[in-house]
Length: 332
Image (cartoon, rainbow, N blue to C red; front, side):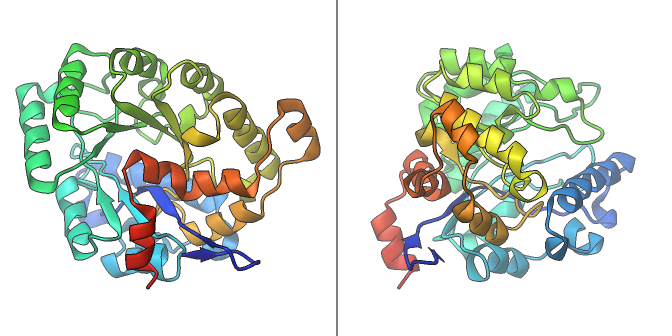
């Protein structure tokens, strides 16, 4: 629970968290080191000095640390835990659904477990989706279109094989497609995170929700022009949030653009844990005010009611979370 300075209690859903292992012992090759080093560079550059972790802790943290940072010391009520397999870079995978399931099953009232698929696997991808639904009852998937697989350096949401996976997801009631479309991470290809393919998939699968994590940054205009015309395209604010500290004017410009184009009902808070921890992000966000010139130019405002939607109410709607029931269970 997060209690504001005037005593109001807010329900917080962190829409994008991970439980990863990028320790040297799990790194398959140089690319595993490059990947986590790039993550750590984002973490170090955009965090307040007192929030920067030692490199060894950042590479591999335990479940107790994660639970504490999110729910005990942190203000989060529920978190969506997302996988990123990266088995070309990591021996046991960077962050798989099966690994995430261990911490989820220990805290079933706190975590919502998502799966993933790679359409380049063909029939095996469809079998994997079936298996995840049967084993975990997943409602969403995290899709990493720049992930390497053999000689392939990525895939597109409008690939024929991807459409077969979307068709199956729709049939099974897996409705939330969380798609990484944002900053590149070494050594992945920047072009593979381009968000133009979202437009095709969102049009052709109107019953699925496409939550574009990182809102396409640094391609914000592309994302906004797609999201404004596709009712089922949402924006996940992972990576956007820490700019409140590092570049507050830039954050104000980005969030105002999103409010103008996408709207307050289709934006979801995310810490991107463990790149950042949610406590300082929520505190800064609740206190953040848009500059007057930006409010006047865009005709938008970051009011307390808008902040409540972004911090939890919108994600609760995506995942059919009964907030009153959750409060009764978690806040008692």
